[in-house]
Image 1 (cartoon, rainbow, N blue to C red):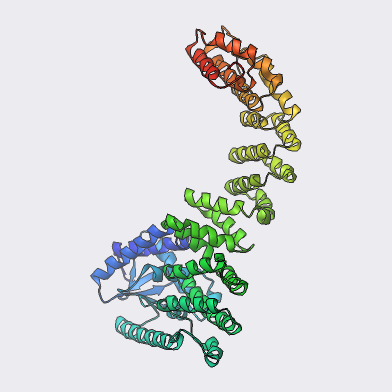
Image 2 (cartoon, rainbow, N blue to C red):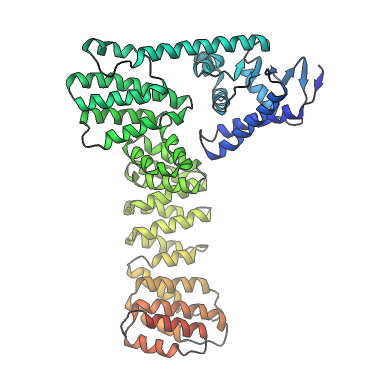
Length: 531
């Protein structure tokens, strides 16, 4: 077969192929997906400038064909894309001038489904018709036939829209007879959502047996419409409905019957991507953060795993902090989930679980947290030390001491500092041993300095003499390095001041070492025993 080369077409198909890999990992609206999606659309539109009537490509297992010639590519990405289309029984692909980002992303999502699953759903073209996609047409013979088919599709969609509008909400109230017909009405179109919301508010204000029955039926229609918009990626149109649900759920004037319907609706939507939608909303508009916090706070237990999965995938630091805040409020219900993920092969998943488990400060988790002290990744070890430091129970102290006694202890300085938060005699004994051992060559300088800082945090009078000795010592060997210990000891004496300590600090304020003298003067200026 003859071949041809078209760098612009190859680049456009390669960009579309890359979308599949990104879409299989990231959810809709994720920042990592937005830029490649816009790039793919821009490349497609550049091709359509050369061919305003549309771009027709035949799909073969080994690649794309145009006018009887096979596209020759230097990359394997277009061929991979053709194979994916081929297994979904797509024989031709037509791109027209009204292609949008939503339509292209929808095609990608549909092609990520298994072929058998897609066939059971009616086929790829059927799904595109259901979602009103007219910028991408499949399995058409030529551009003329495709243009005629698109016109028929638009007319059919317009007729369906007019039918739905006529049968929807021509009335702002209900008679008893019309209430029985409400269940057969079509879901409201986006333009009618505001009218539907006003109607539901009126029914809430009436709060009668008849209005409750009408509310249940009309609220089901609203939920159906929002579900359709949420699954068809027209998410920017459902914000008014979410704001109204938020108002109804938090308004004291809303009756329990109506509030429960709203809560049930939000929980149903959470299974269709509501959580991700709200988080994406915050990433684009920080003003929606309070709304997101309130709505996710209303969701049931099923929201916990969804938030956790998003935290694993999320890269935006601000969204990660928001997710951590939301998950920390659900720490009790997601604790079993987090404990299971402590055995995950990915170090960052284990670290995230440790951060959240530390929020509970549950002494029963000590053994699970202590096991992570021996993890192969040091970042996990550091997080396990922080988690144990927050528990502040003898069991956590013993776990840290056992870790310090291991031959290979790369995070010993951090573990020693963590002992400072433990009000335990065993921790004090270990810290005093660390600073009092003979080490003229300062091989344990970092560990000794960490132990001094921990003793300063404990502020136990039993450590006062040892700290005074270090603060006043002037070695002739490694004097510059030993200065670090003197400065740390002077700072640690801040919480242990008495008359003897203040007298020593007065002497040190005139020390030949300027750094030591300045540190002593600063401690003396703080409120203490000598003032």
